[in-house]
View 1 (cartoon, helix red, strand yellow):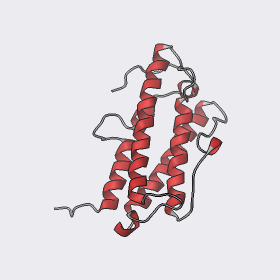
View 2: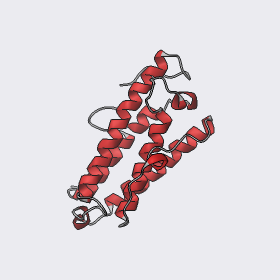
View 3: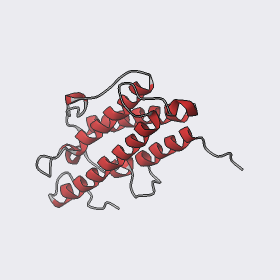
View 4: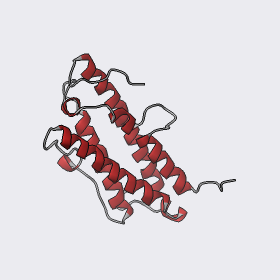
Length: 169
């Protein structure tokens, strides 16, 4: 019988599920991105709404911010650090964005899984909340944007943009 997971391992598991799958709610971020083309990712099918690509870069930015905070430094992404612009819109650049987002997330999950329990209760530098609160927030943040991506996929499919698949679970 496996020993019970530590609180850090449980949080890391939730971060992993929100990102890769087997989440309770439905499709996770990477599951939603699997069939998205660069054309669909860069599209703005809904006026004044970030694109799938911009949301993916934003998620990566916040996973990186969490790592900076876990290292003991203050970090509050703003402006283009919060929503990095899409530099080059090509299929190769889109795949590179997904790969970088996965690497950032994998590093975060590995870091969190290895945290001592006491570290989770430490205050985030420059904030009024602790790391466990922040990390649950990161998982919630990724799921929030995954929901937006699901809607954007449907909007792209309805507008016949980039061969988007209308099927979102």
